[in-house]
Image (cartoon, rainbow, N blue to C red; front, side):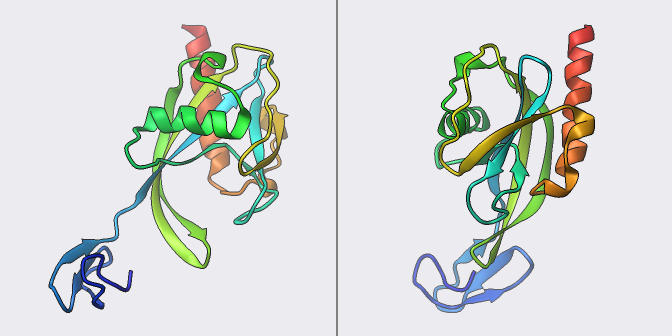
Amino acid sequence: MKHCISCGGELLKLTDTKFQCTECKREQFNNPKGAVALLLFDTTGKVILSRRAHEPDKDKLDPIGGFIDYGENAETALYRELYEETNLSEADITAPSYVYSGYQEYHWSGTIEPLVAMWFWASLTTDKRLTPQDDVSAFESFQLDDIPTSQLAEPRTIAIIKRAFKRKKQQKNT
């Protein structure tokens, strides 16, 4: 953050997240953006991951998901991202279940964007084919032990996937 959104004046950094305009004295905050991620399981119990079509992390494996748009809540964003990236609708999956949320720094276009990602899991309820769209080049399905962790866009994704597999199994047993 370099310039005031009100007057364009230079910003003075007061803390890691708080800035003040040197001209109009308006305070601005560098708060994290919201994002959603969906760990989608196919009808055989494998997790479906997408291949990123663009930088950052082009060709790396990632869950379905993205940023929450203005005016959306997490669920609305999740269903929008599902449609944008797979051409599937809300009716094609089970109700999403919460897995995890966490802070991360997203490196994009030479900047670092702070974000809080909310992770969910769901299962397909249909045999419809996922169609790669938007920023996805392909989909691949994996059993937990077969996930190529070196190909994940975000290293901590494997721990979250393990948590989703565990929650899915617990839900099946209840």
